Length: 154
Image (tube, rainbow, N blue to C red; front, side):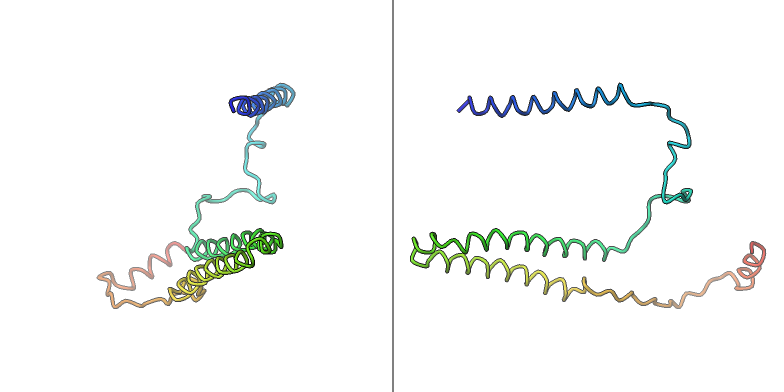
Protein backbone atom coordinates (compact mmCIF):
# COMPACT_ATOMS: atom_id res chain seq x y z
CA UNK A 1 0.00 0.00 0.00
CA UNK A 2 2.77 2.45 0.92
CA UNK A 3 4.57 1.53 -2.30
CA UNK A 4 1.68 2.90 -4.37
CA UNK A 5 1.85 6.22 -2.53
CA UNK A 6 5.62 6.33 -3.10
CA UNK A 7 5.07 6.38 -6.86
CA UNK A 8 2.47 9.13 -6.51
CA UNK A 9 4.78 11.15 -4.28
CA UNK A 10 7.67 10.75 -6.74
CA UNK A 11 5.42 11.81 -9.61
CA UNK A 12 4.34 14.97 -7.75
CA UNK A 13 7.92 15.71 -6.71
CA UNK A 14 9.07 15.30 -10.34
CA UNK A 15 6.33 17.66 -11.52
CA UNK A 16 7.38 20.36 -9.04
CA UNK A 17 11.05 19.86 -9.93
CA UNK A 18 10.35 20.15 -13.67
CA UNK A 19 8.22 23.23 -13.11
CA UNK A 20 10.93 24.88 -11.01
CA UNK A 21 13.64 24.14 -13.58
CA UNK A 22 11.55 25.42 -16.50
CA UNK A 23 10.57 28.64 -14.70
CA UNK A 24 14.17 29.20 -13.58
CA UNK A 25 15.53 28.78 -17.11
CA UNK A 26 12.83 31.10 -18.48
CA UNK A 27 13.74 33.76 -15.90
CA UNK A 28 17.41 33.57 -16.90
CA UNK A 29 16.74 33.79 -20.65
CA UNK A 30 14.02 36.40 -20.90
CA UNK A 31 14.83 40.13 -21.23
CA UNK A 32 13.87 42.21 -18.21
CA UNK A 33 13.74 45.89 -19.16
CA UNK A 34 10.55 47.43 -17.73
CA UNK A 35 9.51 50.94 -18.71
CA UNK A 36 6.29 52.97 -18.36
CA UNK A 37 5.19 52.05 -21.89
CA UNK A 38 5.43 48.31 -21.15
CA UNK A 39 3.83 48.60 -17.74
CA UNK A 40 0.81 50.55 -19.03
CA UNK A 41 -2.51 48.74 -19.37
CA UNK A 42 -3.44 48.03 -22.97
CA UNK A 43 -7.02 47.85 -24.15
CA UNK A 44 -7.42 47.86 -27.93
CA UNK A 45 -4.94 50.70 -28.33
CA UNK A 46 -6.93 53.04 -26.13
CA UNK A 47 -5.51 54.84 -23.12
CA UNK A 48 -7.04 53.83 -19.81
CA UNK A 49 -9.58 56.26 -18.40
CA UNK A 50 -11.18 56.01 -15.01
CA UNK A 51 -11.29 53.21 -12.50
CA UNK A 52 -11.50 49.48 -13.23
CA UNK A 53 -14.27 49.01 -10.65
CA UNK A 54 -17.64 49.21 -12.40
CA UNK A 55 -21.04 48.41 -10.91
CA UNK A 56 -23.08 45.77 -12.71
CA UNK A 57 -26.70 44.87 -12.24
CA UNK A 58 -27.00 41.85 -9.92
CA UNK A 59 -29.37 40.20 -12.42
CA UNK A 60 -26.39 39.43 -14.67
CA UNK A 61 -24.91 37.26 -11.92
CA UNK A 62 -28.22 35.56 -11.14
CA UNK A 63 -28.76 34.69 -14.80
CA UNK A 64 -25.17 33.42 -15.03
CA UNK A 65 -25.65 31.17 -12.00
CA UNK A 66 -28.90 29.77 -13.39
CA UNK A 67 -27.18 29.17 -16.74
CA UNK A 68 -24.35 27.31 -15.01
CA UNK A 69 -26.85 25.23 -13.06
CA UNK A 70 -28.44 23.94 -16.25
CA UNK A 71 -25.06 23.45 -17.93
CA UNK A 72 -24.05 21.21 -15.02
CA UNK A 73 -27.30 19.34 -15.52
CA UNK A 74 -26.34 18.61 -19.12
CA UNK A 75 -22.87 17.52 -18.07
CA UNK A 76 -24.44 15.04 -15.65
CA UNK A 77 -27.02 13.77 -18.15
CA UNK A 78 -24.49 12.34 -20.61
CA UNK A 79 -22.71 9.98 -18.18
CA UNK A 80 -26.08 9.00 -16.73
CA UNK A 81 -27.34 8.09 -20.20
CA UNK A 82 -24.25 5.99 -20.82
CA UNK A 83 -24.68 4.02 -17.60
CA UNK A 84 -28.46 3.84 -18.01
CA UNK A 85 -28.07 2.25 -21.42
CA UNK A 86 -25.76 -0.50 -20.12
CA UNK A 87 -27.56 -3.64 -21.26
CA UNK A 88 -25.62 -6.01 -18.99
CA UNK A 89 -26.75 -4.15 -15.84
CA UNK A 90 -30.35 -4.17 -17.00
CA UNK A 91 -30.24 -7.91 -17.82
CA UNK A 92 -28.54 -8.86 -14.53
CA UNK A 93 -31.15 -7.05 -12.45
CA UNK A 94 -34.15 -8.11 -14.55
CA UNK A 95 -34.97 -4.49 -15.39
CA UNK A 96 -34.80 -3.16 -11.83
CA UNK A 97 -31.69 -1.15 -12.70
CA UNK A 98 -33.51 0.63 -15.52
CA UNK A 99 -36.43 1.60 -13.28
CA UNK A 100 -34.08 2.81 -10.56
CA UNK A 101 -32.01 4.89 -13.00
CA UNK A 102 -35.01 6.48 -14.71
CA UNK A 103 -36.61 7.27 -11.34
CA UNK A 104 -33.36 8.82 -10.14
CA UNK A 105 -33.23 11.03 -13.24
CA UNK A 106 -36.84 12.12 -12.85
CA UNK A 107 -36.10 13.21 -9.27
CA UNK A 108 -33.01 15.10 -10.47
CA UNK A 109 -34.86 16.90 -13.26
CA UNK A 110 -37.83 17.59 -10.94
CA UNK A 111 -35.55 19.34 -8.44
CA UNK A 112 -33.96 21.42 -11.19
CA UNK A 113 -37.38 22.34 -12.55
CA UNK A 114 -38.48 23.31 -9.07
CA UNK A 115 -35.47 25.63 -8.81
CA UNK A 116 -36.27 27.16 -12.20
CA UNK A 117 -39.91 27.73 -11.24
CA UNK A 118 -38.78 29.39 -8.00
CA UNK A 119 -36.38 31.70 -9.87
CA UNK A 120 -39.12 32.52 -12.36
CA UNK A 121 -41.71 33.26 -9.66
CA UNK A 122 -39.25 35.47 -7.75
CA UNK A 123 -38.67 37.49 -10.93
CA UNK A 124 -34.99 36.67 -11.30
CA UNK A 125 -35.46 35.98 -15.01
CA UNK A 126 -37.24 39.26 -15.81
CA UNK A 127 -35.19 41.86 -17.65
CA UNK A 128 -37.65 44.67 -17.15
CA UNK A 129 -35.96 47.72 -15.72
CA UNK A 130 -37.29 48.92 -12.43
CA UNK A 131 -39.46 52.01 -12.70
CA UNK A 132 -38.28 55.30 -11.31
CA UNK A 133 -40.43 56.44 -8.43
CA UNK A 134 -40.78 60.21 -8.23
CA UNK A 135 -40.66 61.40 -4.66
CA UNK A 136 -42.57 64.31 -3.23
CA UNK A 137 -39.42 65.78 -1.66
CA UNK A 138 -39.24 69.56 -1.76
CA UNK A 139 -35.74 71.04 -1.52
CA UNK A 140 -35.20 74.17 0.57
CA UNK A 141 -32.81 75.51 -2.07
CA UNK A 142 -34.63 77.37 -4.85
CA UNK A 143 -34.39 75.97 -8.37
CA UNK A 144 -32.88 79.24 -9.65
CA UNK A 145 -29.78 78.59 -7.51
CA UNK A 146 -29.29 75.20 -9.16
CA UNK A 147 -29.74 76.71 -12.62
CA UNK A 148 -27.20 79.47 -11.95
CA UNK A 149 -24.63 76.89 -10.82
CA UNK A 150 -25.30 74.78 -13.92
CA UNK A 151 -24.88 77.81 -16.21
CA UNK A 152 -21.65 78.81 -14.45
CA UNK A 153 -19.97 75.41 -15.03
CA UNK A 154 -21.16 74.65 -18.57
